[in-house]
Image 1: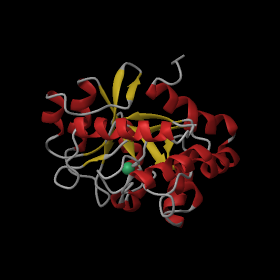
Image 2 (image 1 turned 90 degrees about the vertical axis):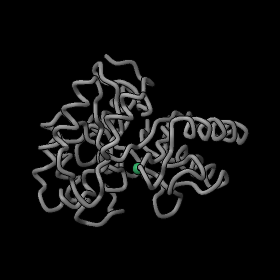
Image 3 (image 1 turned 180 degrees about the vertical axis):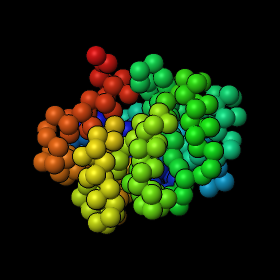
Length: 242
Ligand SMILES: [Fe+2]
């Protein structure tokens, strides 16, 4: 499987605290059947002020450590960008990283606040799409505005966003309600990618293996293959686009 969302680079966000913890996460991720993992540290203005230079340095150190330990896991890097008013300026200054490409556009993992969907989202998405950027919005199933107004999921899709559901949502890690939303999104073909968003090995481990089984049972093996391997593989360039 190809996992496009993780907080495994040590010491730069709320994921791995040190290299030892990062290596434990890498082992667990590989054991879950993930072959390629994208490191996506938070780029959250005022909370985690990571730059592409900081992420790339952390990535290089992690790759060396994973190799030295003989862990069979390919690493890539990007970032999880929290929506804020600086995004257009950062984009123009080329300060934002991308997961890869999809249908001719550069794919950005672009996170909404967990509490709400900020005003002006439609303008931001339109602006980004016209500039050649494809927003991939992670974990809409955990957004509280969406809990109140689930029709906003389809609204996001109508704005042109791709949607990424968290693997743990399918196994009840975030409670029954989040699980129901994830299942409903699956039934309604509203998911483009499933990813782990792993932060540690206990509270937020890599749930890709279990989630793959659940999604296979609910929607069939072909659908699971598409959400856990093919589409994330095409985005990251690990799999050649058809
Ligand atoms: Fe994340």
